Length: 529
Image 1 (cartoon, rainbow, N blue to C red):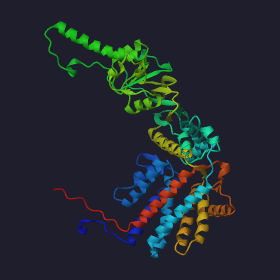
Image 2: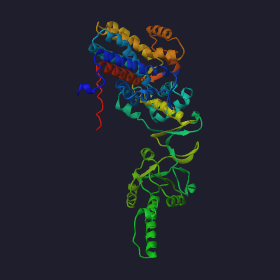
Image 3: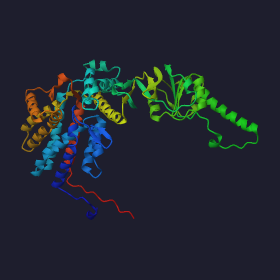
């Protein structure tokens, strides 16, 4: 590449220092959002305190080093569901405290080796801190996540919704068995995560949000005759189609050459007969709920109403697929598949089942409910505005992520900054045992992990320095559950160990990546012409 065609050729130590300053400035926007007393950010028309969402909306395309951080926290958000703000603050603090070592020409390769060694030591220490999860702690895990969100004052209500949506029927028996190996395939298979969907309905209060034990979606456009169809069906037989059940005008559908009125009449009667045979075939399967991703016209709607069958056309593919996944059956693309009269079993495999179907009012909308699906749940979120519902959805998704981590991970650790203080004390003890090459890096990391309890204390209106001094004393006495605000074991503030491990891995990955980049070459776009 021709250097004269580039607009940025900074290299070496100045470039590393510039990248550290950029990450530090970016993280400063997130400090006040951490913890139960964190504040929200208004970015254009977006109201949120979610770390990943804030970064996504403030990182510009011309900041490649910030995009690396954004990519890392997005990966953590998808994997665990939470911890993006803590990751950003921790990686920023580590880089900021390593900056003097870089200025003093401390070898970057040595720093990287020490970081890799320290990361492994921290993960081993987290493994020693973990405690076994039981079903009662899942509620605490969800509530801890929701405490720092917009749902702080509704955490019990939404915590119950999330845990009930995520829990399996045999989860209590699995946790009660003390002989189960938490790393075994049986344990992981016993906590398979259900199919969960979130629907947002404006109107009402947050407390009106509820959990549907199955699938729910908004009523679609309907034709005349819909009012006469049943709206409540016990143990329904559900048939899902990808077939259009609507008569099209001849001028729009095809072209005929006729020589008499009787020929035109025969053509119409033949068309109606073919169409009626398709409807008869559907009825003969025994289905009393018919869903289709394509339209169901007025003639078909009235036909189904006469035979006490509920139908719904133009249902989204996503909702139809969820019904099939959760209730069974298959999506039919051809009515010919249902005409195998000699094989009743073959036809029944296309039929899905659930315990109860009902269409009822939710706010100003009508919703179709398929309840009694063991492996599915739908969260109906209520709130006054779309903006609030978007933030509620992000908060619930974070809670779902940490509960999932609690279900599938190896255990839990105490939250409220107690885990970070324990790691800090551990690193100080380990640093003394290290040689001259790593002692400074270990001490830097020990101080960096204190940024989490320090920020929690500041955001709650306390003196961060005073709180850190008290926590250091308590952890020196072996009180590993001591955090900002008291004893976390008594307050019930817990987090999955998988979340803490993810934060450590992600933060260290960002730090190592930034330290390895000693030059950025951004080529100009090719001239047009």
